[in-house]
Length: 80
Image 1 (tube, rainbow, N blue to C red):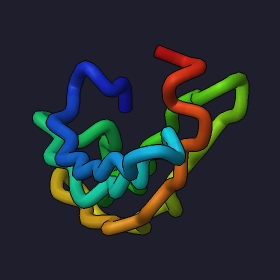
Image 2: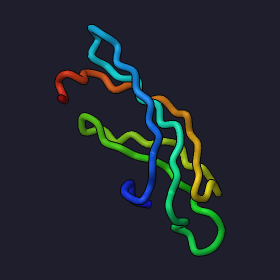
Image 3: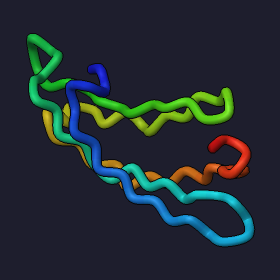
Image 4: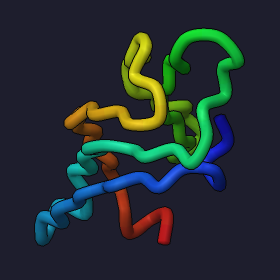
């Protein structure tokens, strides 16, 4: 499922001085189910500083998935 077809809830916190962000991917709501039979198994992936980051796969989550998974993004100022 492409990111443009989903609404994703993301929460982030910036820590001062260290230039890093704690990114929490909380949930996603998809507008359509990509699987013809059964429910889709969604995940979210994004690239930061050349590294591919990916949530776990939510088996049979269908159009609504919840992760609450945290990612630490270092050196934020260098990427902005």
